[in-house]
Amino acid sequence: MEYVSEVFFELESYHIRGGNPIRGEYRVNGAKNAALPILAASIVTGGENLFDGCPCISDVAVMREILETLGCKVRQDKGQVLADTSGLSDWQVEKRLMEKMRSSIFLVGPLLTRCGRAIVSQPGGCAIGKRPVDIHKKALSQLGAEIEEKDGQLIFSGSDLRGTNIVLDFPSVGATENVMMAALGAKGETVIHNGAKEPEIIDLQNYLNSCGAKIKGAGTSRIVIKGRQRLHGSSYEIMGDRIEAGTFLMAAAGTGGELVLRGLETDSLKCLIRFLRYAGCRVRRKPREVWLRGPGRLYAVEKLQTGPYPEFPTDLQPQFSALMTAAAGRTQIEERIFENRFKSLRELTKMGADIEIFQRIAIIKGAECLKGAPVSAEDLRGGAALVLAGLMAQGETIVENIKFIERGYCDFHKELKKLGADIDRCI
Ligand code: EPZ
Image (cartoon, rainbow, N blue to C red; front, side, top):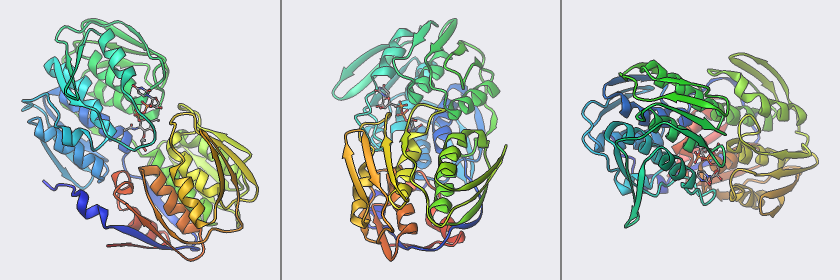
């Protein structure tokens, strides 16, 4: 069992000499935001689960550690994870692990279904907003769970949950997934209204149905879960990572490169592709492959706003915003999901970006070209955006605090180097 040492990452940085076009072929890894809820969901099966396509990233290492501390046996060999949750013997998630990522909140639903209780503390995760868990709590209490807040802990109990109609105040991805997993243990049928429609939720539904669950409607805002089915372990291949895919497509778009990208259902990239075409890229999309050629210089798109799927993904906003800092023209970006997701844009002013920020609106005037400089990552996707800017800039960019980036991208610098980037990982 390897432990992810925070101190080790603190010293690490990427050194990037910009200007090389990103060229070649890339197959995405399994999706972080599908693998994490699915690993948590394996608790409900009480058996052996074999997952293919699990990304080798630190968030998956933390989720494995959480399952092990709860008494499960979890082994990862490259992209394959064997999770045997038959030995589960605890329902309290250690605070030090809860704080490492947002996904630890996904343990509540499966633990309620398996043990009738769960004790967690406030989850961690990227500092991109307040990220409360009120929607999770309200929905779980509608299923009949009792929630007590004591000494910074959330104590959930409910061995007699009952299916019901639940209307989410906002289509929260995590709350939709948590309620799906808790409803598996409820008597009768649960219907989630205004549920999130992200593809990762379809992947969670498909995995759980392969374990004997009866869930339908994922991918729409109305999801129906039949409770108390007999569940068993299963083998399942995690879907390709659409956010990793979008990040690599934008690396090629911003450097005048050319990329063939494979390994996922490309339907999920439709909105991004539309904006990359507005920005001057040539793109051809097949069901499981995308070809993109970037122009010499991108055009600024006039307006972009993020929103719940299938609108423009908030997880690709920092990267797209970075592209616009060197595009010809003016762009207005509205971030409608998180209240604090422009940190990387502020960092990019050190590289010559011309940006004004008014709360959730950023106005970007494209610079002729960015100049390499030392910058610091403060969250996962913002860190990836700084790398993209470094690839586009003249001169050397040093991206510090890469622990954030390595939470969600496997061998990021190695893969970019294979595609022509002049990038090193240094201490
Ligand atoms: C998931 O986070 C993803 N993480 C995020 O990806 C992604 O940005 C987000 O969904 C939106 O698509 C994982 O799947 C592990 P939300 P989640 O609940 O579930 C507010 C990445 O970079 N809200 O849909 O935490 C919340 O504050 C990460 O891979 C409440 O107010 O997102 C936010 O403003 C970053 N109360 C909005 O809803 C709640 O109880 C959307 O959050 C829950 C959420």
